[in-house]
Amino acid sequence: MRRQILLPLAGYNLKLTVHYSWLLSAALLAAVPVFLDPQLMDRAGAAKLGELLVSFTGLIVYPHLALLEDGGISETLYAKRLRQHPLFLFRWLLTALYIFLATAMLFGWLHGAGAAFALWPMIGGTVITAVALGSAGLTAALLCGNLSAGYIAGFAWYLLDFTTKGRLTGPFYLFGLLRSGWDHDKWLLAGLSLALAVLCTFWLPRRRLD
Image (cartoon, rainbow, N blue to C red; front, side, top):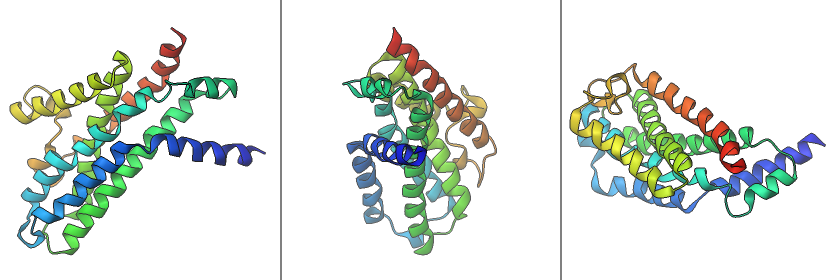
């Protein structure tokens, strides 16, 4: 019985999570090979691509999750007496998985086509940056109840680190791969992303009950 409930619920939430923003981010990544010659790409070039461009996929696909409960969806969930916390985390993790797969496909192709860089550190660092940016935008959108606020907050963080080179954000600097092959502060970014996701899961029911 439990499996009969969980599988349709997972499929339903998958349909909710897959958004036109996924298509937009996929189109962005698909256009990258058109403008690049992988055989001329080294570690620095791959890092710039990942940190400064591919990371934007997180900001594109995450903020809309904040407002999924509007428009009658929440009433359906509450009618079934389902806790929103695991559902929200499921959507957050599903989006992170999409970012990982899309990034892995892009960098895997570049690496296989002759680009010279360490594959998995580049994938991991880029995914963490993207998820951190997206989670920040998601949190801002949820707290403000406005999708535009999410995009503005995420881009503000991006622009701050781009212009100050991390002088103000310290260990939470987004673009650590630009400095070295692997930045161990990325683990702090990953932890921050998870903390923001947990904050959102508890803030969402609170907002709905206000």
